[in-house]
Image (cartoon, rainbow, N blue to C red; front, side, top):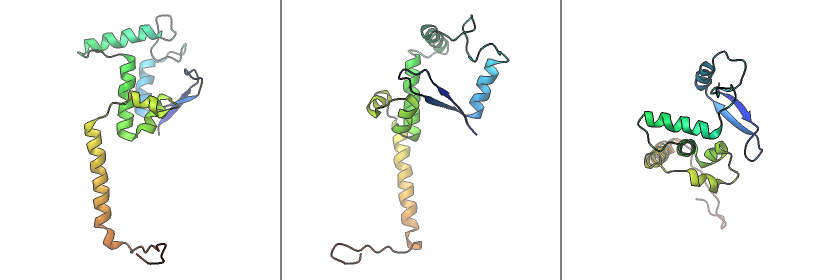
Length: 150
């Protein structure tokens, strides 16, 4: 079962839910260790939360060490939005990002040709499956306005 928590200090002062798989919760818990002084997994030297600019520098520096260029917290947000939209649809991405208007989410979304191909292929397989088994289903008669049966 997945775990979730809520964030109450969002930019719009709305409650946002964050869902984590048990595996991710376990990884974050192990990174946090036994520290009972703070709820933060990644802490500043003083034990509080990272300031945004400090966290941005840490992410950027570690990305460069891994050979990745131009990685920022905001680009990771775009990547996450696109991954959710490609896998589950733009509305789920909108909810995950906390946008009230899907048009805002569309600005984050970067289409993935492979995801589009997979979605269209899945649709074809469903259609083929229905046609294949149509002979096993009863025929449906629809009455038109003129009273004729189809």
